[in-house]
Length: 301
Image 1 (cartoon, rainbow, N blue to C red):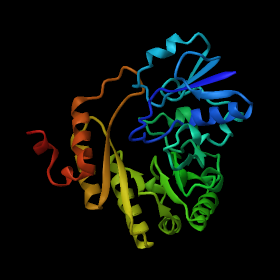
Image 2: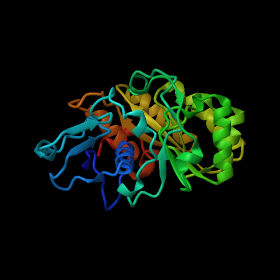
Image 3: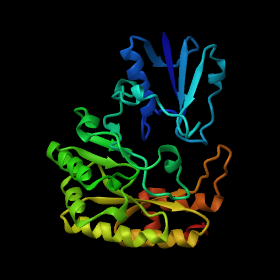
């Protein structure tokens, strides 16, 4: 059977994309293991097509309508209810689909103990559950990008085991969705400090209530001996003044901010122009500009 794949969000072959599509890599691995012919869709000769996207705002390619075979659509961009069958979810990713992607990618946990009103994770994945092991996810690769939404909410013994194993194996980690600063303790801070990191230890500062937890987490990890860099996501909603307050707090902590304007889980949702403008202001030049001027001055130009 000819299985063809469509990464709807797209893969920039020249620059690479931030992430490959993990679901498509697992689908490819499973069908190849069953002896099927699996490849990217470059024409319309197929027996079954899998199209996957992460973002609701990514438009469907017109080509999908041209296939004369079943087209299975999945991923958060289509539905938060549809999941991979357990036998496919359990497969190791087929990295041959993205030959320029050098890192391992996967999950140690799924779900989250929080119920943030702007987040679809509780609806999509439910409460936190352990789903993987760092050595298995790494699969021989030395850098591991982890997509866990709240790794530190896992039981302490699991957190300890995974961080100790990562340090022992010399893995470079990236908890790309961010760690929950409220759950950083002196004990896990010491383990975080001993690990190697791809680029940053990441947090999220999505409300004013997170300023103090982020400051405390940075202090604990620094005191444990970490000399690397920190990064924090910064959700931008209606109160731009609140967003700028959080931005200034992060800059004082020497944490690189990355602003994200609020986007509702609707395909036709239009981002507020001022929120989008603030995000550009924060993110341009890797946060260097916003450390020099305030948003009101930026908007004068």
